[in-house]
Image 1 (cartoon, one colour):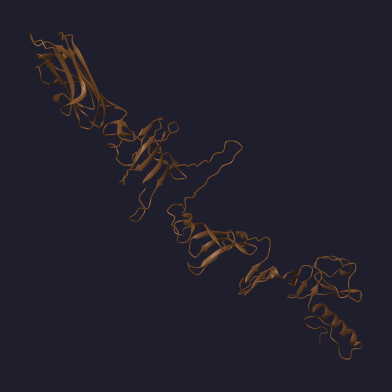
Image 2 (cartoon, one colour):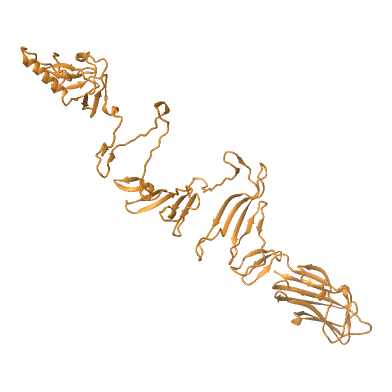
Length: 521
């Protein structure tokens, strides 16, 4: 029969043994050491200098010295002034007071119990450095935490993915950030499947910072970040409900501060870009508005930077194009361009507008092929003004005592085609102020001797008041008269020259007779 117990190796009292109390006391001392095993340290290589009765240590060192020589891996206890060693068995646990940790003996060496735990299943609570509760079944109080991927050499992939799951779209899956246990920020899938961030200054009132749409990745800021707010319609969308700035860019510098917004474009792909072509846009600003019938308009106002030519290493011309929509229409068109050659180009339009007028407006009338300016009352030409100079193809005789139209039937200058030779008249192409002049030379008609020659302008077939001139003492081929007038005409008004002789008929000398006029800006 063995003299030791099977598990703790306690000495057994033999039948008829003398000094039974000695064996009994040894067994009690061993039990006192091993039961509720709590050791002071495991890192000493030799006994402490002033041990206390009952002190226990784990001898983890491979080659301890002094009274612990030969006791590597043992449990040693100080009893009656002597260090005694007890050999552990696989599976024994010991509490290390200096580390506040449990250690396990695997049959060869002692190691921290936490290192031997390979699985914890279905724990109800877990607290690290603090207490978990029903509200927070997992709680940790610490200053740092590390998650690192298991490498391929360790049987892993080198990746690390931290997965969080919620039950349904309407539930919340988020990371809540707090100060003094009062919430200040939250990021996650908050009551929908879009990733969003919201912040709070007091833990009660929240502002939504941004939200990324789940279906396309478009990111909304401002009111577009709020649940139920405007749906982002572009990769970056900013929406607001006040007149305050939606985007603010600032720059500070000891030198010359500047805020730069840059764009880059290329044909092809990011991996294989190719040159841009004439008409490609570097940037575009587009405006839409909600209309009374419901729904947003198209892009009714735009501002674009455009390539003027196909880009090469030496040719990189550009222009800027502003486009607006005519009042009362839905047709957007270019109104002005700043061209690569330095020119300011007003895009021709058909006629002049009648709405949205204000003094100082300038445009190019494609119908009249002229620049025009609005002075607050009417549009006036600045260029390509109507002007003419007319002559007579032959001398003419005019009876005495009656006004007769002078037959100006040859147009020597006729910008805008305003003079009609077949009708011997000027027809105003548009409303405006015009200046006219006429010069008539006298020629005798046979032996007739008229005493005076008069001339005047007729407007729309009637004599124009205050515009008449005359000459007396007529000398054949010498006497002339000059007539001028400045008239405000409406479009379509006509102006003609009429003449009259007094006393007898007379002639008009074609070679020295003229009729001219021009528009006054």
